[in-house]
Image (cartoon, rainbow, N blue to C red):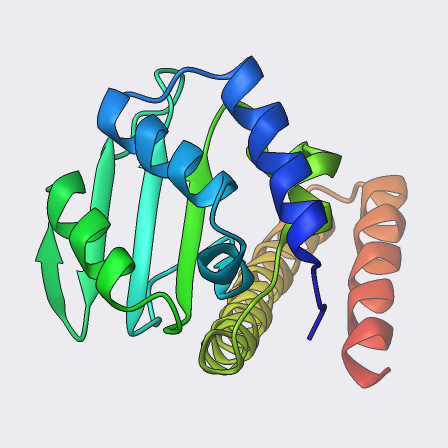
Length: 183
C-alpha cells in the first residue's frame, strides 16, 4: 500500500479546489476544513473506488455525472455534508476513504500521487479483475468456436464451387486457429 504524506494530500486538495468546482459548495467547504486539520487529514485515504470501504465520502465536480456528495459509515448512506462533517469532527482518528470524481480523474497524475487503496478494496479489485479475465477468456473461446464453425462451412462451399484458392486461404486460417488453441 502506498503511504501518502499529509503535505502531499494538502498539495492535492489545494490544486483540486483551485481548479475544479464541486457540485456541492458544502463539500468544497468540508475539503477546505480538512486542509487545516492535519490530524483529520492524516486519516484520509484518497481512493478510486469506495464501494467496499466501511467509512467513505464521494465528492463530484460539475464535470462529473456522479452523485454530488455521499457519505457512508458502516453501511449507512447519507447525502448530507453536515452529517459527514459532524462525524469527521467527532472521530478525527477514524480512517475515511475519499473518492473525488472530476474530468479525466483517471488520467490525472496529481490524483494518482495521493491514491491509496485499502486492503479490503484490493481484495475486491483483484477478484473483479480475475472475474473480468475469466469472462474475457470465455468470450474469446465462444468467438473462436463460432469462427471455426464458419470456416468449415465456407471451406465446404469452396469445395463445392471448386474454388481452389479460396479453399487454401480458408484452410490456412483454420490451421492457424487450431494451432493457437494448442498453445
